[in-house]
Amino acid sequence: MGVKTSKNGDHKGLINFLCNHYAKRMHRYLKGHGETEAKKWKQEYLNMYSGLAAYEILRENGYTAEEGIQAYDYICLLMRKIAALAHKIMDLFPSGYEKVVKSLTDDLDGAKSVCWTTEVVEHSSDKFEYKIHTCLYYDVCKEHGYPEFTAVFCNHDHWAFGVLHRHVRFERYGAIGDGDSCCHDVFYRVKKGEN
Image (cartoon, rainbow, N blue to C red; front, top):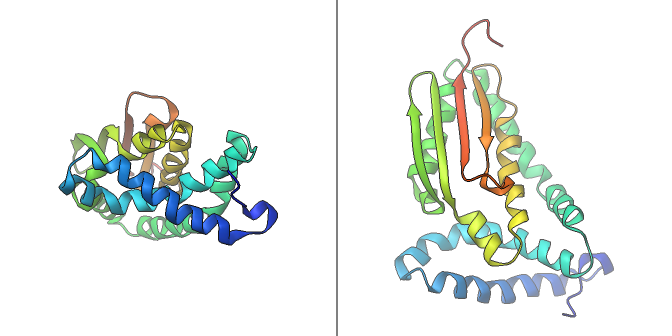
């Protein structure tokens, strides 16, 4: 392919590849989904394609799946630490459960809702449980031949929500990126004396 990676110090070649090659692939992928849907998906796709592109380049240059995923995890470390800190701060407040659930419902019902087909199983004052049956992240990774890369996006949640313990507790019972039929997440309100 002739793309120089950061392994040999030429970042310019990598950046050009990401901008040109993946913009074309994104357009081809979204073309079959109708103009309106494609516009809605574009922003989320742009958020994920740079990581997927970097992973693909690493794989094509001899890196194993594990090494490629480790490289992406390293790249995302600062962003993940910031997400963890934000949720840790939310969890300090007695209204932490409500704040976390509000941020989740905003994602599931708002602009990002085009990424998933979601079923809310329970939304009560003590438990927020949902299942994701289809996932744009998985579909895109699979379309590009790297379904295993989906797991890195799933891992963002472990970083962001794994710090919750004071007023909210996060449990994941399945993830499409791990080979399960759906993503199944539950957020529990922690009552006094439980933590």
